[in-house]
Image (cartoon, rainbow, N blue to C red; front, side, top):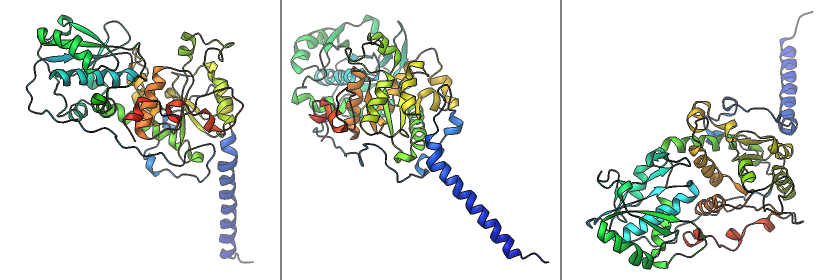
Length: 414
């Protein structure tokens, strides 16, 4: 009996369709429910997204996500230009303590230099170890910094060598310096020395109001002058792209959680007293996110360096939980993560937290305040504060910074 080729082809096609259907069911309904081993290391080569913009997004939308970020625009009036003004001396500043402090330090330096008619020397960046110092361009984009301040203050990348920082008088200023303070405490010294260094004092709260006459300089300096240098920015963008590729169930969205075991320990947050210390351990963060409606498929980025056993409670609830070590490109890891200095990690975490579609701080800190400011500038106002309240509505956990617009950044953006 002869073989009918048409019947053979029909049988092959039918079998292929059943195989494809089986794979689709496994991928969409079974694979997302399989937890990652707690000890597993997710390799970047597996997760890498060559073109994040080309990824396919599912229509499924688990969790209390905002459908769209609210666009913002600057509310401040652009300061008048002083391009041809002759400089009468130099103001020096060192950026310290991490990215959450840098914007305020730059704002103070710009205001002081502007009011004194001085040139701002390109800042350096001090590390946490004594004597540790980086060039500004290792972290921030020098050209964008100078361009953003063009006409506001003159910035010199190579100030005179005789203006050595070690020989300069140092003036301590509050974190939101006023015209009166500059006139009475800084100007007399500057007129005598012509060069001085300012050091920002951070005991006062960032909630204090800036005089309206100086608000435009503050806003411009804080939110437009500091941009990551291209290589570091590309790294952060690639990490964001990787997380979005893992979040197809949630249309490419992810949560950034500031949860660092070492910081919790330094704050005295022991396993038995998290509630009394206003701290939240990993399991409590997981329970909170589940309570307000986030699905277990949700992808989470943690600021913790490397995996720690105390994070297991969160991954038990949300298997797609990652630290930077798991998603950073292998060829960048030695430079930005595995080096002896961990300074780069602070900047990676800060900008990852500003880019997340939702942000959860595990404890109150200036890092949290700084991230909130950056998110307001971007229109990313979906921020939740973990609490033991009974309510399951995410709206009941929005911080006053957003709900009551108490953060300074609201005076800069409409």
